[in-house]
Image 1 (tube, rainbow, N blue to C red):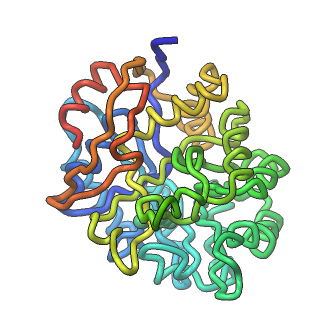
Image 2 (image 1 turned 180 degrees about the vertical axis):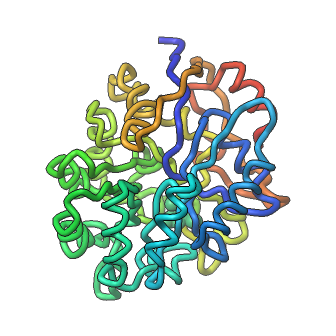
Length: 355
Ligand code: DOR
Ligand code: ZN
């Protein structure tokens, strides 16, 4: 196979950041994704309809001309989130979903939810109006090993939540474990999961290869090899419950290569190419389109994109560094050679604009 053509995909989980960074982050995503679910964990979290509307305007202003890109906004849940605000934002077409960060689970999650009991009325409202809940599924208890946080979250929080709210639509985001894969397979159809490109490619050894590798550090952290294998099986299974969400999350190089390095992997410049390679390696290229471009919109009740993008077998080297908002960021797989390259009008136009 030397060419792959699929319906234009969407990214169902991305961090675009804000301010001067938006020009490059939006271009890197819009080069191949028509829509994206935008995470609300800004320095000042996006908790209100007005904040989301303004953030959406800033993203739209930063979007490259010539390629339609639709940011889909999310509401950052806190202990004090007002169900009325959530419902109003959803009705107004500003919020597409709500995001649950357990307090302190990750970057800018300090205002997150301390106990899901605190947001029961919000969840009840979301269940009633059909609004999806996006979950960073990790417990934060100090006595729980960092590699077990996702599996324990399933046991202690998620199992109960999906029982208590049998109509709630849930996205278990960026899953990293075989336990999460099994959980999703056994749940009802409205409980789905996104899978990142990096968790399909690296296992936890990547963080410790001949030294500490901060650019392989993200949350949830990559797990053992058996989990990576389970994720690859799930992504390429053809099951509509697993679909694309990159979790592309840029941090300046200096913030990663630090005594206390930030969690996050900037994969937008390579994400689709990496997914394509993984599907090819798994002998499942015929299932890439559904994973990347069909199951996500189906879950969210949106039409799939009508235009198409093409990837060609045309090896290229990932840059060592990309400038984002005048700061150096090291992309995922920096310096390595990828076999697939985007090659469409949309791709070419945006590739020029993208960092
Ligand atoms: O690695 C991560 N980075 N995981 C998250 O959940 C947040 C993200 C970020 O915003 O940097
Ligand atoms: Zn994320």
